[in-house]
Image (cartoon, rainbow, N blue to C red; front, side):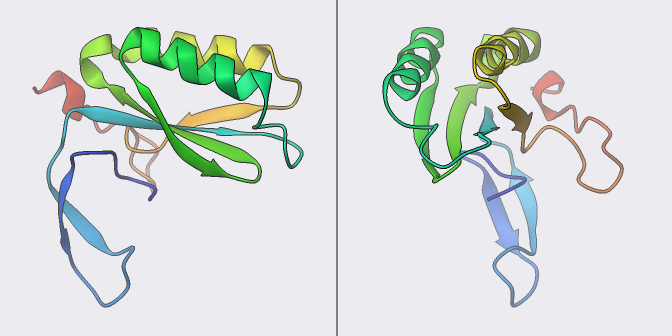
Amino acid sequence: MEGLATGDEIKLTGEALDTFKVLKRGGNFSAWIFFPKEGMNQGPEMTRLQREAAELGGQLDGGAVTSLIFTMPASIGFDRIADFFDLAVSRIEGAVWMFVNAYDPLTKKPLDWWSRG
Protein backbone atom coordinates (compact mmCIF):
# COMPACT_ATOMS: atom_id res chain seq x y z
CA MET A 1 0.00 0.00 0.00
CA GLU A 2 1.33 3.42 -0.87
CA GLY A 3 2.83 5.15 2.14
CA LEU A 4 3.77 1.94 3.96
CA ALA A 5 6.54 -0.63 4.07
CA THR A 6 7.10 -3.96 5.75
CA GLY A 7 7.18 -3.60 9.53
CA ASP A 8 5.29 -0.30 9.79
CA GLU A 9 2.74 -0.09 12.58
CA ILE A 10 -0.42 1.79 11.69
CA LYS A 11 -3.79 2.83 13.06
CA LEU A 12 -6.77 2.92 10.73
CA THR A 13 -8.34 6.37 10.86
CA GLY A 14 -11.46 5.76 8.82
CA GLU A 15 -13.62 3.09 7.28
CA ALA A 16 -11.50 2.84 4.13
CA LEU A 17 -8.41 0.65 4.43
CA ASP A 18 -6.26 3.37 2.85
CA THR A 19 -6.95 5.91 5.60
CA PHE A 20 -4.33 5.39 8.27
CA LYS A 21 -1.81 7.04 10.53
CA VAL A 22 1.68 5.59 10.84
CA LEU A 23 2.41 4.99 14.51
CA LYS A 24 5.92 3.61 14.04
CA ARG A 25 8.11 3.05 11.01
CA GLY A 26 9.55 -0.44 10.59
CA GLY A 27 12.89 0.75 9.25
CA ASN A 28 12.24 -0.21 5.63
CA PHE A 29 11.73 1.60 2.38
CA SER A 30 9.17 0.35 -0.08
CA ALA A 31 10.11 0.94 -3.70
CA TRP A 32 7.96 0.20 -6.72
CA ILE A 33 9.16 -0.25 -10.29
CA PHE A 34 6.63 0.36 -13.06
CA PHE A 35 7.04 -1.17 -16.52
CA PRO A 36 5.45 0.20 -19.70
CA LYS A 37 4.04 -3.16 -20.84
CA GLU A 38 2.51 -6.20 -19.20
CA GLY A 39 4.94 -9.04 -18.60
CA MET A 40 8.09 -6.89 -18.67
CA ASN A 41 8.38 -7.53 -14.93
CA GLN A 42 8.90 -11.25 -15.47
CA GLY A 43 11.73 -13.42 -16.68
CA PRO A 44 15.46 -12.76 -16.55
CA GLU A 45 15.23 -9.06 -15.61
CA MET A 46 12.96 -9.81 -12.65
CA THR A 47 15.33 -12.56 -11.52
CA ARG A 48 18.27 -10.17 -11.85
CA LEU A 49 16.52 -7.42 -9.86
CA GLN A 50 15.51 -9.90 -7.16
CA ARG A 51 19.09 -11.18 -6.85
CA GLU A 52 20.65 -7.70 -6.83
CA ALA A 53 18.16 -6.42 -4.22
CA ALA A 54 18.93 -9.44 -2.03
CA GLU A 55 22.66 -8.77 -2.33
CA LEU A 56 22.01 -5.34 -0.76
CA GLY A 57 19.80 -6.83 1.95
CA GLY A 58 16.44 -6.14 0.33
CA GLN A 59 13.76 -8.38 -1.06
CA LEU A 60 11.22 -8.60 -3.85
CA ASP A 61 7.77 -8.69 -2.25
CA GLY A 62 5.66 -9.13 -5.37
CA GLY A 63 3.98 -6.91 -7.88
CA ALA A 64 1.26 -6.77 -10.49
CA VAL A 65 1.19 -7.16 -14.27
CA THR A 66 3.27 -4.01 -14.83
CA SER A 67 5.08 -3.55 -11.51
CA LEU A 68 7.43 -5.00 -8.93
CA ILE A 69 7.45 -4.10 -5.23
CA PHE A 70 10.59 -4.22 -3.11
CA THR A 71 11.38 -3.84 0.59
CA MET A 72 14.78 -2.32 1.26
CA PRO A 73 16.10 -1.79 4.81
CA ALA A 74 16.83 1.85 5.55
CA SER A 75 20.19 0.73 6.96
CA ILE A 76 21.36 0.31 3.35
CA GLY A 77 21.13 4.08 3.00
CA PHE A 78 18.71 6.30 1.10
CA ASP A 79 21.20 7.30 -1.61
CA ARG A 80 22.48 3.76 -2.14
CA ILE A 81 18.92 2.47 -2.57
CA ALA A 82 18.06 5.33 -4.95
CA ASP A 83 21.21 4.62 -6.98
CA PHE A 84 20.28 0.93 -7.16
CA PHE A 85 16.81 1.64 -8.56
CA ASP A 86 18.08 4.41 -10.88
CA LEU A 87 20.50 1.90 -12.41
CA ALA A 88 17.84 -0.82 -12.55
CA VAL A 89 15.36 1.27 -14.54
CA SER A 90 18.09 2.64 -16.81
CA ARG A 91 18.47 -0.92 -18.16
CA ILE A 92 14.74 -1.23 -18.96
CA GLU A 93 13.34 1.10 -21.61
CA GLY A 94 10.35 3.01 -20.32
CA ALA A 95 10.56 1.74 -16.73
CA VAL A 96 10.32 4.15 -13.79
CA TRP A 97 10.48 3.71 -10.05
CA MET A 98 9.46 5.49 -6.86
CA PHE A 99 9.80 5.31 -3.11
CA VAL A 100 6.29 4.90 -1.75
CA ASN A 101 6.97 5.73 1.89
CA ALA A 102 9.68 8.40 1.70
CA TYR A 103 7.73 11.47 0.60
CA ASP A 104 4.55 13.17 1.78
CA PRO A 105 1.89 12.32 -0.81
CA LEU A 106 0.48 15.87 -0.78
CA THR A 107 3.52 18.13 -0.40
CA LYS A 108 6.07 15.73 -1.97
CA LYS A 109 8.53 16.75 0.75
CA PRO A 110 10.77 14.03 2.26
CA LEU A 111 9.29 12.45 5.39
CA ASP A 112 12.85 11.98 6.65
CA TRP A 113 11.87 9.24 9.12
CA TRP A 114 15.04 7.29 8.21
CA SER A 115 17.29 10.08 9.56
CA ARG A 116 15.56 10.21 12.90
CA GLY A 117 16.26 6.56 13.70
